[in-house]
Structure formats: C-alpha cells, structure tokens
View 1 (spheres, rainbow, N blue to C red):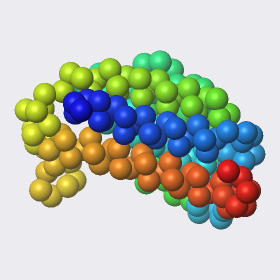
View 2 (view 1 turned 180 degrees about the horizontal axis):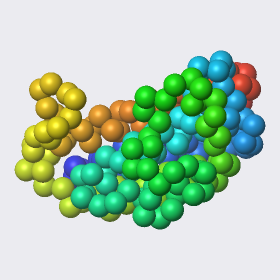
View 3 (view 1 turned 135 degrees about the horizontal axis):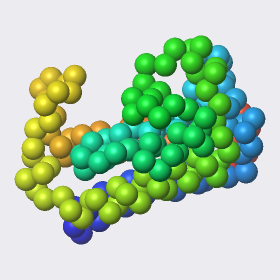
View 4 (view 1 turned 135 degrees about the vertical axis):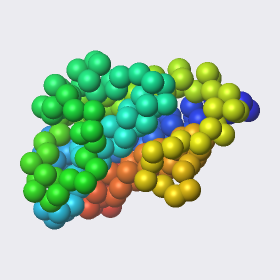
Length: 173
C-alpha cells in the first residue's frame, strides 16, 4: 500500500463516521448542546472540517475552501481564515448555529476531495520537513501534522457520535 492510499483511506474514514452520525438529524438535533458550555454535533463537524481545510490549505499554499468556495456564507460566518472554532467561549458555542446536515457533509466532502487529490503529490522529503512557527516544542514535521489533523478529525467525529447518543439514546444506531 502506498502512503497516499493509506492517508486517503484514513481521512475518508472520518467522512464515513460523519455520514452515519448525521443521518436523519434535523437542525434542532445538530445544534443541541448537552450543556451550554458543551459542543453540539453541528459545531463538532464544522470544527473538524475547518481544521482540515486550514491545515491542507496551508500545506498546499492555497486559499481555504471556506473562503475560496464561499462555504462561510452557507454557514452564516465571516470569511475569516482563522474562524475555526478554536478558543471559542461558551457564549460563542451557544451562538453557533449549524446549517443542515447536507451542508455540513457538502463542506466536508469538498475538503476531503481536495485533500485526497493532494496526498499523491507528497514525497518522503515533504513528510520529514520541519514546520516552524507552530506552538509545539519541538516543532513537528509535516508528517506529524498530517497525522495530528487526522487524529483530531477522528476524535471530533467520535465526539459527534457520542453527543448524538446523549441526544437520542442508545438506540439511535
């Protein structure tokens, strides 16, 4: 198996979890929070997709799809490349309103498609390149950041499934 096939399959796994988790949910379900300082399903899906969009765009040296393709408008959010959900306060979480599941999945699929087109272009030397300017000590290499972005996405997809279980009980699946 080639590296790009492994990355493509692993990142594609996030989409499979999201499709399963979001099936049949309405906007009320997507925006429900277990407590006012907790993330909703819609927020979790938006955030994990935003983070992947930010990271892959940075790696590629291209504009985020969030802005380039106008996804921010469909979410009623600003065209701010730093609007990823990181550092939001509980009051921000309460104000966040997710669009429908179709829009959440549409944005995720667009980001995933670009990521999967990018993966085959990677060379071993790219993966070993150290990324300066991050808050991490020691600075990570490119490969570590790709795996970190994958890990973050999988964790948030699992959290979205868990919140659905809180919302609908054990029988939702």
